[in-house]
Structures are given as C-alpha cells and as structure tokens.
Amino acid sequence: MPGTDKPMPAGDGRPAALRTYLTLLRKRWLSISLCAGLASAAAGGLALTEAPVYEAHTQVFVSASGNGDVNDLAQGSSFTERRVQSYTDLVTTSRVLKPVSEKLRVSTPELRQWISATVPTRTVIIQIKVTHHDSRLAANTAKDVANSLIKIVDEIERPHGKGETPVHLSVVESPERPTVPVSPTPKRDALLGLLGGAAAGVGLAALREQLNTRIRTQHDLADITDVPVLGVIERAEAEAENVVLRDEDAFSPRAECYRQLRTNLLFTGLDQKTRSITVTSSVPGEGKTTTAANLAVMCAEGGSRVLLVDADLRRPKLAEYLGLEGSIGLTTVLTGRISLSNAVQPWGPSGNMEVLASGWIPPNPSELLASGVMRDFIRELEDSYDIVIFDAPPLVPVTDPAVLGTATSGVLLVVGANGRLHRNQLNTALDHLESVGARLVGLALNGVKPNRRAYSYHSYGPTEPAETPQGKRAVRRKPSGRHSARREEPGWAHPADASGEVSEQRGHVPDPSPGQHRMPGRPGVPGQHRMPGQPGVPGQHRVMEQPRLMEQPRVMEQPQVMGNPLTYIDNLRAPGM
Image 1: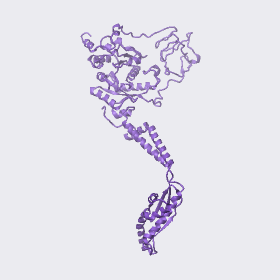
Image 2: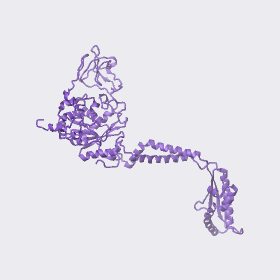
Image 3: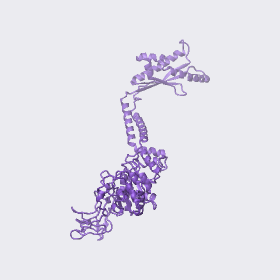
Image 4: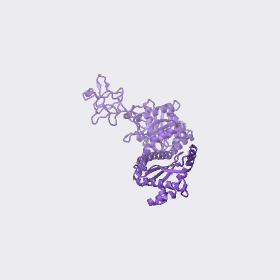
C-alpha cells in the first residue's frame, strides 16, 4: 500500500542488504575515493615528517649452576623458569638502569621509556629491546643494560658476595647497530590511511544516503511504495527546443520511453472499461504536462482516437506547449458558452489527436472539477474517444487532481527524478489519492539520466541504400540538425524539378531552395504544399483546412477570471439542455 516501507528487492538473487551497499558504492564512489585518497596522502605525508626511530636488540640466557646428574638438571631447569620472569622485571628497575642513566647522562624515567624486556613462552631467554632516534646510542644502551642486569642479578643471588650463585646469566646475542628504522613507515602508513579513509568514506556515504530524502531512481520508489513503475523517461537534452515530441523525434530514445509507457499503461491500466486517465504529479516541476502531451502523441500514433484535456485550471501550460489557442476550452464548454466540437483543436499529423485547452481560469477550479456536470462531461468524452487524457495540477498543493481522479478511470502519477521531490511529498500525494479512493494505475519516473547503451538499438535511422521505382540506388544522406529522423511514407511522390521530372543527380531528392515550403520530414519544391498521398504540382498550393472555432466576440469581452461557474452548471441541468 502507499506509504509502506519495504526492503529493496534483490532481483538477481543477492541479499537486499548486499544490493543496497553495492548501489551505495556505485552512487557515492567519487566521495568515497576522495576520502580514501585524502586520508592516504595525509598519513603518508605525516609519516615523512616524523624523525626515524631505530630499534636495537640483545638476548640474555639464564641457566642453573652446577654439574649434577639428570635429576639435578631437571630441578635446575624448573628453578630457572620460575626465576627468569623475575629477572625480566628487574630490567626496568632503577637499580639496573641507574648506572646506565648516569653513563648516558639522562634521567632514569626517561631511560625507562626507551627500554622494554620480554620472555618468549617456555624459554629462559630475556629479550631486551631499546628504541631511540640515534641508532648507535640504541645499540650501546642495549649492551649496557644487559651487562647491568647480569651484575645486579649476581649481587641479588649472592647477598654477601660469597658462595656460588644458583643461576648464571650470559649475553647470547650482542646488539648490533640498526640500519633500517622501525618507524615511520610511509608505505604502510599510506596503506592504512587508504583503508581507514575508505571506511570513513563509506560511513559518510551511508549517513548521507540516510539523510537524503530526494527521489532519483526506481530503487528509491521501491523503498516507498509497491505501485508499479510503468515507464522510465529519460531526461531531454538541454538544447532541445520542443518539450513535445515532433515528427523528427520519432527514432529518438526519448520517444521509445513514451512508447513503452503507452504500452504498459494500455496493457496494465487501461482496458475496455477504463477510457480516461488523469496525469498528475506530487509537486510542480516534475514534467506532468510534458508526459501527458507526449503520452497522447504516442497513443494517437498507435491508431487510437485521443483527446488531451488541460484540466490544470490554475496554471495551464498545455496550449502554450502545443502552440494552440488557450482562451477557449474546458471551462467554456462546461459553462455552456461553446460546444465541444467547436472547442477541440486538432494536433499532429496522424489526425487522431485533438486537444481541449483549459479556457478561462475560474475562481473555484476544485468545485468545478468536482461537480456533477464535470462527471457527465467525462462520460461523454469516454463515449466519443478511445482514450481521454487529463493534465491535472500537482497533488500536494491543491486537491484538484484528487477529485478529478475519482471521476476518471485511473491516475498516472509522474515522479520527477530531478531531485525536487522528497520522500515525504510523495507519501503525501499517495495518501491523498488513497483517502479519496482514486485508482492509481502506476508511476512514471521522468527525467532520468540518459543511458545511451540501453537505447543504442533504437537510436538509428535507415542507412542502407534503397531501390527506387526506376531500379536505381537512391543514396540516403546522413541526417543532421533537428530533422535527423526524416521518414518517407507511402503515398508521397518524389518532387519534380523545373522540367517536371525527378532529379537523378547522385540519386537523391534535391534540397528545397530558399522560400520553399515543405512539411517536416517531407520532400517538397518551392511554393508547393501537399497533403499525404497527394502528389503536388509546381505552383499548386494545397492548404489543410483547419476546424474553425466559434465566433466569440462576447467571450473575448469576459474578464480574465470568470464568475462562479456553478451558476452556469445549474442552468445546464435544466430540461432541454
């Protein structure tokens, strides 16, 4: 249901958590790499600035005195193991270090920080380690400490200086002057910094992902709702002049996106019982008007009779996008000022698409859209057309699309992937539709980043030479500019030159000269206008007869904002209307 949280589906069988982390790494790889690089450089640079530290080692062996039998040796070995730990603790005592500190002219506490002593497990060897910035001083200090330990142990084991000591200590490995510092290690520090920085980068990316509530991908939608995504529409190029697809855009990847949306909508949402659809969005700027217009174009291209209605009675944009008259439309028809046949305007070369603009902006659009007259009008449109598409206002700011969605067969919710929409706004829009009982047929994710590899198959036109009726090869030019997807349809004849014969120079149709009129994607000659399937004659002008709008001097005299349309609605209910 809308608003319910659910884990991201793992379509390829991997755990959802692993898929989430992989998606996070793919989205935030740049910031993670930056953190890792900075941490590695900082760690390596800091290591290079530190003074080198050298480490000198020496070993002292502890043995029991005497030359007894095997039992005596065994007892002496056990005695030595018990004593060796005590001798190790003596290494850092003041009694052992004081003679060395006096020789080096350093304090005993300072000397103690240089020295450490350990005993490997199940051995009687004392390992003394001295670290210092001076390698020579480290070696000499290790030697002096070992000698001092041997002397102090001998004094302890023979309190009065008489008799034989039970143990004997000897140096088995004299310290050597180290040549390689033990620290710093720039390579190791840089590697550790790289790993630490990468871990910190992943943590920051995960935190940022949790705090980021913007919707940009299908996975973001899957986290919010289980409503199906019927179409993913790629972002239009920045330099594109037309937001509505034209004839030259027939082979574009964006056109294929709208065809996919049309197919999914017709087979999953619209059937024989559902003829009307409300196209809306959560907030302004998500591309609902563009989606509604292009969806109507694609449905008309498929052979359906389509009516596109501008039901955004607050900020209508449809007439401006399509280049049509917007002062006559839905409101003027509902108030009885003009008939439907005189208000609709044809659009597009297919002849299957008509547009009903918004008309004058009323003062109470919500009440007008929720009226019984509007519902009866929708039923009338469903009987007259195969598909009726309503462009409605956003859901979050106003209630117009919610009430209109209850009167139409279904609602298509456009979700912008441009970063404007947040999760809470989408949840609010879904709650509005659910509260009024509107049927949400699906979502359309609009404005995603183009994926050229995915649409490489659809992004080309015909390139192979084709046989002409005369049996010659017609060389196809490489398309360029806005008319890069020109097509020739059956019924179109090749233009004639001044002599009335087809030009055979290089086997291609001559380009129009200045002042020549021709329809987009159709060959023509100067001064010639032709309809599909009607070969033209030079100098002959054939103009498509456009449906004329009703003469309306009294309509143009009305103020920009009408009075209460419901007063007209009451009159419409009178008998005979």
